[in-house]
Length: 128
Image (cartoon, rainbow, N blue to C red):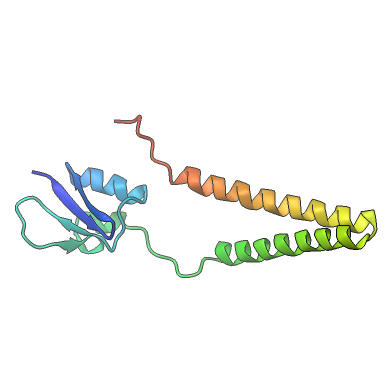
């Protein structure tokens, strides 16, 4: 018998509660999803299941990182716009160069942060 987990995307089967807790840790299963134990007929939310509720990560509303990331994205776009306007209008090389350096630096920070978050959500399938 297998445990079944129902998510908005569909259903998954797990051999044990340990596998479900690993899926919770890796972000495949969320606390709002539902689990059906072998031999049971009623679905239970994962965050209400006695063995799984300790593994559910608390949801955060607006994280400070997301606000700062939005400000950083806005500053990146603004400095890129200043650089393009400076090139078209014939501004000083110092102004255009500074705006380009700031735009490249900020966009690199955003790209590296996005790659780091994506890599931390990756599942190592070699460990079995």
